[in-house]
Length: 397
Ligand SMILES: Cc1cc2nc3c(=O)[nH]c(=O)nc-3n(C[C@H](O)[C@H](O)[C@H](O)COP(=O)(O)OP(=O)(O)OC[C@H]3O[C@@H](n4cnc5c(N)ncnc54)[C@H](O)[C@@H]3O)c2cc1C
Image (cartoon, rainbow, N blue to C red; front, side, top):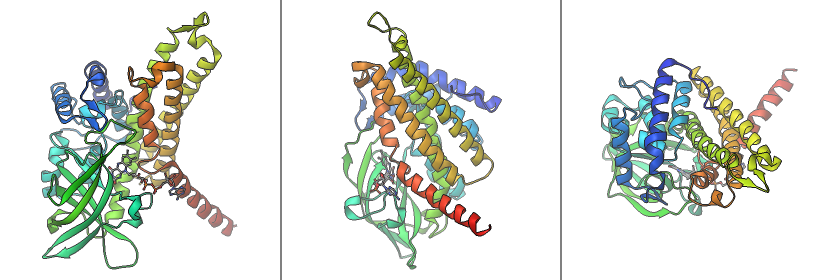
């Protein structure tokens, strides 16, 4: 189900990661330091020390700084996700994985040295500041509604605004802030690199959300006269939306990869329960209602695996993969959510208890149907493409 390895090097890395996650990380799942706003900083440090010792830290980036292909990354990240704590331990987690990818593509050598290197080594965490409070009419599904502003001042920039749902901002050392720039009517944005914590970036509150896997939780932030020197602009001024696209497809897909691993574990737990637990004189799996649910899980998982590998192949071929990653994100997040829902049901009362990770997988997958583009937004965008292509085809006879 974890699918074949695309290359020998990815097989070696992925097998090491799987062994580490199953043997070392899984026993930490009941650790009291796994709290509602994500694993505590000392737990993260402890897990990362173990990962370094096992030689599996940041396994998708090679010692020479190059990145595995997306197909290879899929093999590795699926296995890192076999525990909800796995990606945190081996540094394949969101938002750092996507931020590292973006900095690797767009940052200057000096910026990489200062902001990327501590992320790759796993000594620092990062946050991506895009979404704003809906209550104030800010950017959400529609990034062009961005309200945070950046204005030029004394050769640098001054940023003002409020952000919401900023994963991992609490405890992060590196921030990428999206702010509105440019004088044209068309929305334009720029990305800024900032050191955290910063007195002008104030955490107003941590949101109490349904999920609990990401260190630092999700914060609401006030950006109050934040001064950023010109050399901390990421890439070109006014190109923020284009860079967001660079990050978007691989970041969406890596969420699919990690959550695939977690849901595979949930399914393993459900299978084990259904093949040992009896009711009405026979094993649960021998009751058609349960057997069919496990069969449907198998079908959904296989389809999700194929979508992930298909989209990874598209990105590896050099495409931006915007349409393909939208399709994959919808198909995979919805399929994996169905699987976790069935796993909860198969486990009965245990399914809603925290005795196994099934309950957490269910909560995490519910949130995943919203972040990195809610299902409806992807479908809406696909429908726009369908309309354009169909009308175009009709025009050409
Ligand atoms: C757990 C979690 C972590 C997150 N982490 C980060 C982060 O680190 N950094 C960051 O910047 N943001 C982050 N976000 C924010 C996330 O990207 C947004 O929640 C998402 O983009 C949706 O924006 P919104 O919440 O404002 O919903 P809204 O824009 O208010 O949309 C609400 C709903 O309207 C519907 N909708 C919207 N547009 C359309 C359309 N065109 N067609 C049909 N239906 C539509 C969808 O069903 C959508 O769910 C995170 C969110 C969550 C839940």
